[in-house]
Length: 248
Figure 1 (tube, rainbow, N blue to C red):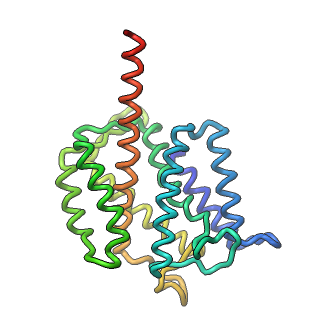
Figure 2: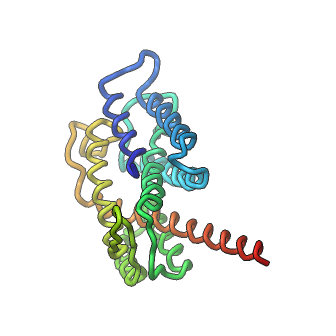
Figure 3: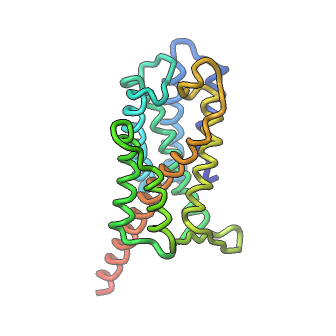
C-alpha cells in the first residue's frame, strides 16, 4: 500500500508502451493519468492534504533536477509531447513525487519513529549540500564520497523504528537509505525498459542501469528523508505548542 503510487506509475508506463490513444502523445497521457491518480489518492483519503503538500515539494525539486540534467545530457526523453518543457515531460516530476508518497505512506503505515536525529542545522545543511552536488559536479569536483562519509558521521547514532504487524523493529538510518535507494535502482531499470527515459548508453538499445546510480539514489533518498523528517518535526512542534496553549 505504501508503494501504491510508484506501482501505478510503473503500470502506466507498461500500459502506455503497448496501448496508444490517437491524438494523445504517450508522455501527455502519463501526465493526465498521474494527475487523476493524485486526485484519487487525496479524495479517497489514502493521502492527506499535508502529505500532498510534501509531495508537491518533491515534484518541484524533481522537475528542477530533471531540467538541469536533461540540459546537461545526463539522460533524455526521446518521444514528443505537448507537455514537454525544455525537453522534460511534466509527468517526470511525479516519479520523484512517488518516492515522497512512499515515504509519507510508510511513515504512517509502519508507525515510524526516529531516535538520535541530529541537530536540524547539520541535517538540513547536509541535505542541501547533497542536492547542490547533483548540479555543481558538472562544473567542479564531484564530492559525493565526501558527502557519504559525512552521512555516516551525522547519522551515526540515528535509528529508525518501525512496526510490522505487532512487532517493533529498528535499523540504522544509513542502512534504510541504502535499501530504499537500491530498490529505486531496480525500479529505474524497469522504468527505462518501458521507455520512461534513457541514459546515453541506452540509446541504441536497453541496457542495465549502471550500478553507480545506486549511490545517486542513495543520496537523493537522504535528501527526501531529511525533508520529510524535518517537516514531521515542525508539525509535531506546532501541534505541541497549540495543545499547550489550549491547556493554558
